[in-house]
Length: 132
Image 1 (cartoon, rainbow, N blue to C red):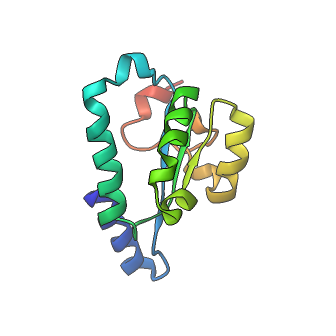
Image 2 (image 1 turned 90 degrees about the vertical axis):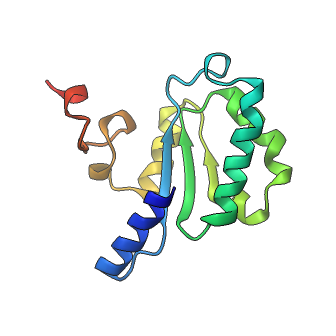
Image 3 (image 1 turned 45 degrees about the vertical axis):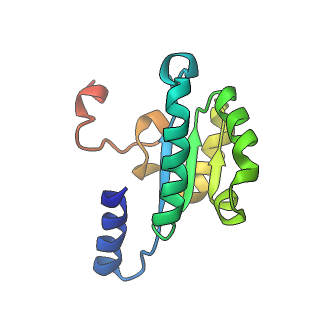
């Protein structure tokens, strides 16, 4: 998270008009039965609240796509614990690509999104994944 905030600050200094960024997560392949344990839940909650307590100025929107239904249910259960500002910044989309692509098009240029998210950008370290 420190790296993300540092990048936002650096871009702000370089371009003068960058104050916040969007945090975008692709949950494709995430399976709560395989990737979540009961003992991990307090750590995840602590990290989420720690982020919002210490880094709220760095991220304008936190967006999750391809989220399993169970993730959305867990978020709905925890939503009352979030502040209004937190709720307004969190966007969770399921696996319907048409729905989340419409949302992403509003905040991102397609030439800045990787192919897995409907874009064309190949970021450093992704070359092998998209070799023809």
